[in-house]
Length: 107
Length: 159
Image 1 (cartoon, rainbow over the protein chains, first blue to last red):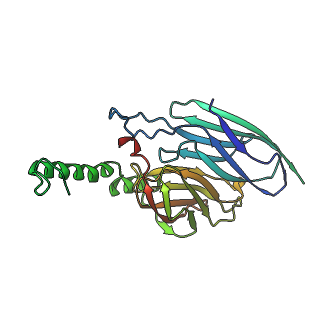
Image 2: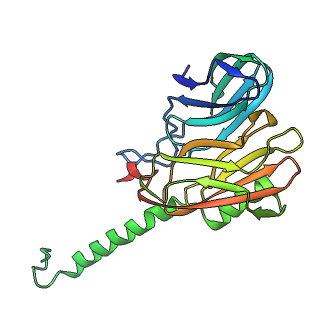
Image 3: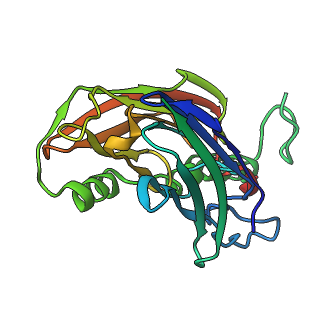
């Protein structure tokens, strides 16, 4: 499991547009760099990020080596209903890190 | 003045050759680490085929000058009401002068409410970053932003 930080309001008014910010600790090694012995440092990256509200897909990203270390992603969500927000990061080997946040939407 | 094996007034041919070799190495290294125009074309064709892409509706927020190319804040916003009838389906981001042109693909939905994303990217050379938005009606729109970078990403471990 990677260390992930998520910024999302716990309570929102119906119809409000929320900003969700995520940050996860990961080197995002590009595979283009060489070490002091001139050996290529192997690629080691996160390849996918997914955000769902319960089982509804809200936002998804394919990441490539051009994304900086400790990937930061910010996006939006229109608050229409309460539910559980699921966050998932997948690395190139299929290892996943997940986080969840409860969202309460009031009228 | 130069102090080579040939003395201060007349540098030897060997020294000159060594310097010339060093110079060409410097110019060759970054070239190896750039996507070619053909790779850029292939990356775009892989996603869009030969569908027409119209300039407009896509704004990229990017500094004109970045001191460090390892982490440059970038935002993309697309002019769209983001309703179930009309929304941005995806935003595809390209860096033509990085080692590989693909940067990221963002998939949105009407639930997004606002077609705007933000991330941090690596920049390894001066270039025009390109974003292409695919809308729910199937149309493709693009925007670009020029960036100059003082200290490039990707090649730091080489030096």
